[in-house]
Image 1: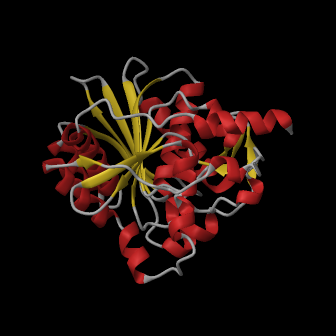
Image 2: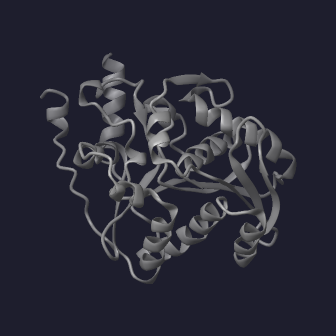
Length: 292
């Protein structure tokens, strides 16, 4: 118990990483991934137009039998870069229910993962491998459940020694626990969320479980889209405890709107023109959480 407590404290006290780019440069980097994540919802011909507008080639667009999750692989040979995009769900209620399932040991990643997300990732992984060039960098992206699957795909690629680029997700739910997040903390994961989207917050953190390693835990940096041109960057416990500010609110049409990919695209477009990094006050007393 003492080991888990101190390990948890190390995660909690780790400072949030600041963006290396200027705010508008950050959103200029995020925008193509948002377009790709959105394209995963579209028919192949429409998706191909968006992909080609980004100077990528559509190499594979499919739905894995038994998984029922659309995905595609896009390639830019000049950049030596693949992007794997995974479609999410249109049903926020299902997303909230599905993410509450028990974490199970995953043989490929060697950590505990949400079983449904891992099954989808494994199914996609097996069929995309022949398309991938091991000399190219590979990025993954997706919205909602697609974002969770995209992160697990990146874990599998990392385990199998593929070169990874940025992993950028939108409205992504949690998929592993504290020790799982620690094992892959070296990955370049950015989770873009809107401030009132409930899906990235489920299941919510119970402060009574604060010293346990077997609780759902996000990995990577969280980029919170706020009003107008404002945004915040959170990591570690500040990111996890953000849920306490809004999760007591009953699920509403407003939350549904905040989860839609169209809303993410609108906010990202706005912040690509002008963006301001601001503090995000979670009002968390770490010592009080540990009973001090």
